[in-house]
Image 1 (tube, rainbow, N blue to C red):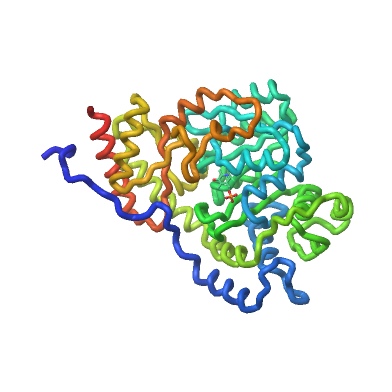
Image 2: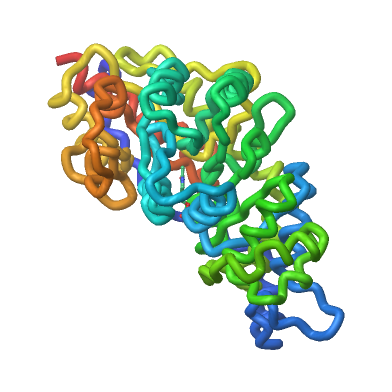
Length: 405
Ligand SMILES: *Cc1c(COP(=O)(O)O)cnc(C)c1O
């Protein structure tokens, strides 16, 4: 019996199932609920709120001067754009392969995205970045480290310096990731992170914003909805910095709740171990799929300290019909693969073509070609190493079946 005719392998676990919240987080959340002190500014005399403690710990973890907790990464990006001085009508460069909340944050700030092409390795095309910067005269680059793929940050910094561009990083999917020894989010003027359920720390919803800049953090704290209670932050600049802005910055009410912070703090303490567990799974999947005809992986650069919490590959030397067959057959066998090449946006997956509120339809032929053949799936930590072997076996078997025709 050949491998092709072997029994059909099926996978039975859910790709959307996350691990439980650590016991310490559940215990702390219960205490908070018993005290009723869920709002970050509802503290007893002398007490430091759970959100304020998290902000201090996260700033220390990534080596930033300041951190602010917010309601989501999307709202963090919005607040970051406002705080660095983006005005309505400003152009913002952004890699076209990103998630819908990213152009959403740009639109929310009244600004206009200028999409930049990506490369075969799913990274921002730095040549196109230079071209689009010159054509548009944009002075901001919102770099989204989409699905944890980290572009050469040394070159990004050179380009931004040369062209006088302010960099903001969307690190929703790169909590715990580094370029060289530096955490993502620490290259730009501001870095934004997510603690939404599908990311590396889970509080349902949540965002963290970091910066070293006194004025940016003071503005961000005010925008987030601090009322005149910003003194209670322990990750903040001197009080006089707030005096410059306290009457001219609106309160957007985008705070993080103490409950979210209580769930995140023990996950932050355990983050490095979790990242290693993701990479064990990622590296195994890559090893199991290496050499399978028609499957290509992105090249990872030596300085890229990635966290493989999701897996992407490109189907090569084939056509769209075969890609559709491949995805359908994998799904029938329990392996749920996302596809950015679909004509209609589905669930969390949409591409720049369906963000039609963006004026000036932009042609991105390379990005289209790449996304048409890119496969994407989550690697939740509820999958054991054996589960990952089964996922790889399904993909290998289905690829053999579809592409041998
Ligand atoms: C999830 C995600 C976001 C949005 O994060 P939220 O916390 O859900 O707002 C932004 N960018 C990328 C790349 C993401 O993966």
